[in-house]
Image (cartoon, rainbow, N blue to C red):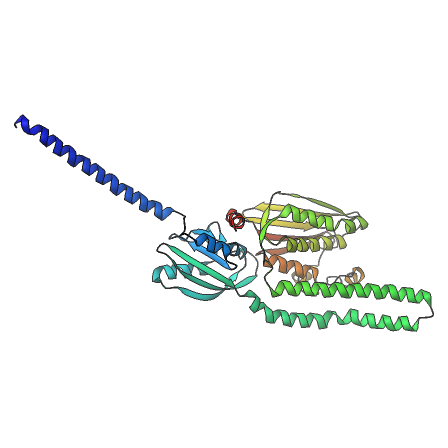
Length: 383
């Protein structure tokens, strides 16, 4: 070949080769961008602010059904765990919308947490959010379902329990009138009258508290709760009663455990358990509070060395107004509502409570709650 053609041919070959390389790089860049879009957790502009402002539960899912954004309400209801939807029913609705493209709305009854038998009733709406994402909104309807039950229970509780102290107050008032000329009798009847009045006030307050727990969702303002602080509060609130009964309170176990919920309500539940343990413990004994945090579950165990609970009564101790020893309850002023309140507080937090007991050796009540996930803590801090 003539050497005069070598230079032009080389230039043409170089241009073609360079264009090919540029083309390959451009195609690779486009594919890389598409791949990055697929794995990206960014949501469309403005969605973050909308989710954070929702009072109800809101969840945004990517094409792989990973949760890329969840409102504090979704965490409080236990709908999300480890960046995934917990309930298969919700996953099925999301898949249906992804296949059909049409929004759906459905009312569902779902488990409150990973264990326990408490349920929540949600009105769920699912729709596409742009091309890639799915938006799930859930509105709590539990209160409306509970309302009729609460009304029936409240009336039954009032008629069943308040008639006894009210009758006692009436009889003592008559006795006071008849013994008006006997100072010793007047003082004795007045002391009993005061005791019955205090019991009546306590029962009324506990019925109101129990009705409130049943009537509405307790987690109106959920937050990450430090279990160490809850334990410290329960010990402090029961210190006087423990000292007067010469009962030692000891605590231990894992530190730094956190759950998602309402700190004052969890404090009431643990206070009731510790107060019961002290009440049924012999003088000179010990009440222990132990915390365990493992496998996403936080356990708080309250152990006493008291009289124990007969096997036939263990399944009934959380019933309203049930008393293992009615005579002792009358002597101590117990209403039989404390453990029922504990049960409802724990269930409202998506957990459960268990009891182990052996007559003559003591009892252990164990509260089990879902641990606050990192996603829950992050969503709460952003809200």
